[in-house]
Length: 168
Length: 380
Image (cartoon, rainbow over all chains, first blue to last red):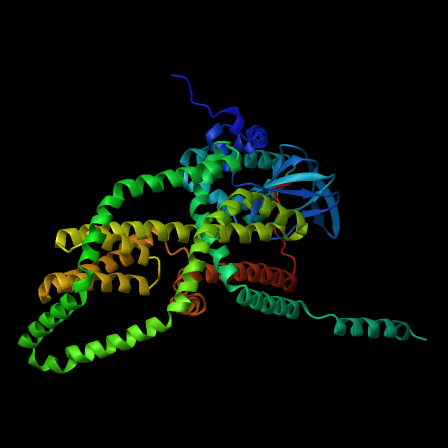
């Protein structure tokens, strides 16, 4: 039996593009169109001009940010000096630890060029995954992959070994 | 001339500047007072807007569902309105004959209503006095009851001009509320986007947090209340039908409608049913059964249904809950009692989140930077 489709005239083209974009974000890889649609209606959009701060290191984290366009610089302050640790462009995401815990931001984020970000609030994300186990499993698996990547990078720099030693 | 002497005039100027600029708390207080005055002056319009927003909240999940299926928002809102209108007509078509039967029976009995009510009250009073002779002193005679009824009716007749003008406002509100709700639903995303576009970047995260929390709590409360009322109305109708009380459908609908008014609503619902039961049975035992049923229904609603459906989303302290219901009733009548709880919840939640943020930054400023070990390359 052919799959039911809504007539083209009533479909929101902008939302279709957003949906495709969300499907390309690594954090939401593997989600079906229906699942992405549920996520889509929970997102807010905000434009940032060059140099505008998204959040500061130490701010309370309450949301995940996805780069829709532009470039976001991730900066970390060490000994009163600020160093750039990453530059994120379209399809990248940051602030993901806010979805897991309520700890302060461990770095600052600033627009490196005019940028548009999609914002997903933690409680909205929690509501979504509480009601949809399939979404929760896929997103958490993607998040774990990302975290595993960070740990490997930290290990290669010797950071994790130091943590283990200092903890003991 | 020392360095301090050079700095002194500038500090003085700064101090004077600080004296001239009002503190933010003063501006907030002034803004709140002005908003309160505006709400008071535009009382009727504010009420209509609040009811339209409530209706929009109730319909919004359907729109979100359609949006998640990538349907244009304006199309989704239009389709939903058409769907609601069709459902309303279908419900009226199937349910109205039943309700009309009950209403016809009620209105055909209306001329003899007073006599029947008097007879029934006398019968119940006599039954109680026969069992407990001491209770006689608590009951009024027919004459005293008539006198009280006349006083009450005189008061109502004096209110008729006000009531008729009120009726006109109610008809207007009946048209305006769905209309405003339509625009709220259609343009809510644009309104939110407008606010986000004009907010400073540093306030975005907290603003989104406040908006989402309000949405979650108020949406949950209103949807819970609507489902709770339908369930309570259905249970009341079924229970009254089993108990053999007249007009079970009508009384069930009335109980459901009144259930949305905190505290007062269930009492009024039970009172209406009691009057019908007194006239019908003219005896104490069935009346006690009906009252016991309403008490049990309220208990089940309070212990089982409400915690599961409304889920205590409003998080209001019982004292604040009662105070807001009383204040809402005083300012905007019965409708004020219904919408007082979500409004106070919005205020409480906004203040809580803003204070939480303020306290967080105050604590961070007071304490030295924590020497935490950072292992992430750029996770934030």
